[in-house]
Length: 138
Length: 138
Length: 138
Image 1 (cartoon, rainbow over the protein chains, first blue to last red):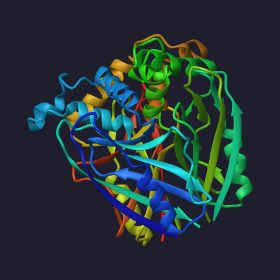
Image 2: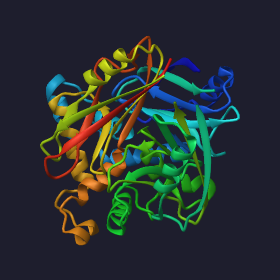
Image 3: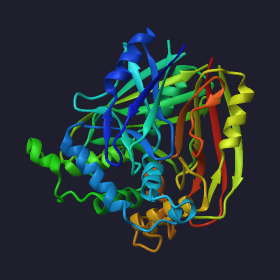
Image 4: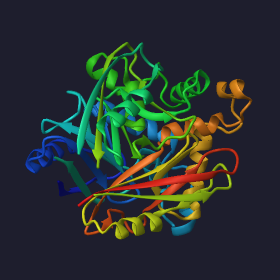
């Protein structure tokens, strides 16, 4: 009833996005379950999971929106605490959220043709990311 | 243990929001399940699901916030790719997210009195939307 | 297969955030389930649930980002309807979302060391909040 898959990714830093749709779809297919939900979550407080049309323009536009909302070079109180430079990463990640849950039916995740599940790196430096895919269904 | 309901809606374009609370509540009641979670997801990369107090003022305020954050007439690299005009739609939708998961107990979705589940159309043109409701529980 | 825990919290108003990680982790441990998902949801349309590194700087930075995005003293059509002053709360909450779903494996929620689950009060006045934790798994 519950199937777990973990996926590791190496990111290049803020604005890097990885299409994980194929990995998630394969995990759902491998589970042998027909209907249920799949939760995709990234571990850590400076990355997020969402969906977008995965083409360079839209990916760049999302990064530009984050830069307007929480500029990388802005002043953050988080920087005062640890000497970090990733205050922008923390607020972007808290807003975007670390996880996404989608239904699947007939063994297929409910997504549009031009809609991909993405891991969004929001930290200011390259990171090794762990994505956990949890599938519940019957 | 798993119950699926699909709902179709015709939207009028960016800023149009549909209250789907009644449909979701009915799906949970019809499932015969007492406790569990319900995932509500819209298929496509230019719409989203969230909750809001569904009255015209708050709905308009949310649209105005999106317009400040990602102006419809702004410059988007996505436009260069396909000749589309909906770059604002893609970044708004990626931020809002395509799905929402809520608990239900005693057959009732855990919502406040002034809190409704909404389908938010973010695309620049009218669309036919498919909303999938997936209910897991016992 | 389904375990429900409800948690009550008294908040001090807009910008107040409560770390509920320990409560959620205890609920998962008490469920006796090994693998599954946990959904954390706040009832009401002027609060939200997310994750953040729970230290005063990052919490303050998130509040400051919301203030740029939807200023508390801004003009909101929601105010015209009820004489309320919490239009900023409604749009912030709709964007952040009222719930969060995370996987757990080996009885532990998939979170980073510096990543906490938080209840974010977005309303302009103190509120009594009900947080529902729904755990599904095996």
